[in-house]
Length: 345
Ligand code: DOR
Ligand code: ZN
Image 1 (spheres, rainbow, N blue to C red):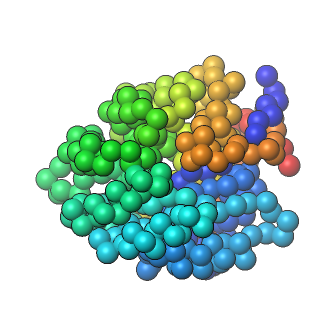
Image 2 (cartoon, rainbow, N blue to C red):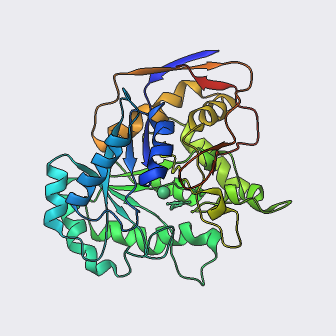
């Protein structure tokens, strides 16, 4: 096969930032994706409906002329989130999900949740109205090994939380482990999981063996190879519980290449090329559309895109190493192998 036409993909987990960085990275996503779930971890975070509306307007204003891209807004869950404001923002169609960051888990998560009893009312309201909770699933306990934080979170936080809130619809964001895959697969229609492009191609050796590579450092951190293989199996299986959330997370190079570098891989530019290569290698190109264009809208109860894109296979594609942003260069994800598929323009 050298050509593949599929419905226009969506990205169910994306960091666009704000200001100069937003203007630099938004065209990279809007070129290929029709919609994206926009993460709210700005400084300060997007907590209220009014803040989400204002952020949405800044995103629309930063879109290149003629781009057909719809930002799907989220609210950042805090211990003081007002359930009524959240419900109004959802009822108006503005907000499509609420994001749960355990406080301290990752970039700009300080306003996140420490005491889950304090968010019980919001979660119960979300279960009533069917609004999905997007979960960053890692415990923050410093005594838990960073490579175990996802599995421990599922057992000690996520599973009790779901049992205590029947009907709550949950997206396990960026799963990175076989345990995460197994839990999502067994969770029934109210549970789904996003998988990034980068976690399908890197394991922890890529970050740490033969030198430390900050551009492969993200959270949750890539795990050992057996986990990567479980992720590939899940993504390429066609199972509706799994869909793409790139977690494309730009940081200027100086913020990543330093003694304490930021977490995040910037993949918006080439995520679809990486995915096509992964699916082709797995003999599952016929399931790429389910993963990038069908399973996500089905979970979010939105229609799939009516637009189409065509991916074509040819000589290896040269992507830029970096894109310029007002805040400095941002390194584009390097899959570490040639990418033969590209989206036709
Ligand atoms: O690697 C990551 N980067 N993981 C996250 O959870 C946050 C993100 C960011 O905002 O940079
Ligand atoms: Zn993220």
